[in-house]
Length: 109
Image (cartoon, rainbow, N blue to C red; front, side):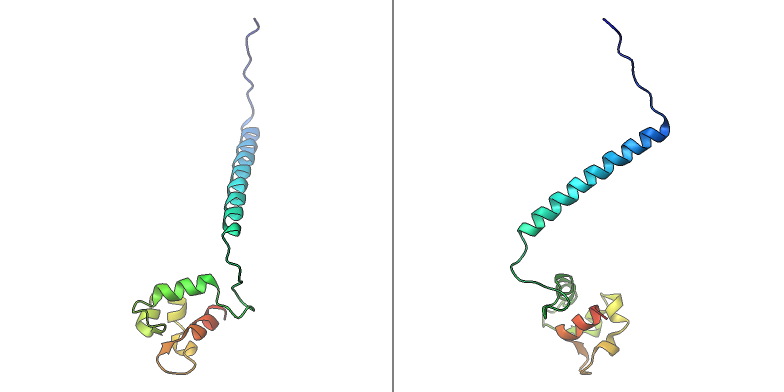
């Protein structure tokens, strides 16, 4: 019986093969996540131009709205540095709180 010879590849070849294997595995995982999340998607659309706030904006607003009154005070907005830095500019009605509409405009500006 003939002895099996082990192939030895150069470092460059092994690196390319490893990169290809990781890339294909990553793409498979991404495809699986995309397929799973699209099957669970809501039948309505969110985001700019739809009149509905994006899910990310809604989640961020709800996370920061600790007293759950539907408005962000300046103290609550401090949890979101990008909004906190422009709080007075985004508070267009100057009532000391950000409504969901004001918040959404701030997220997209």
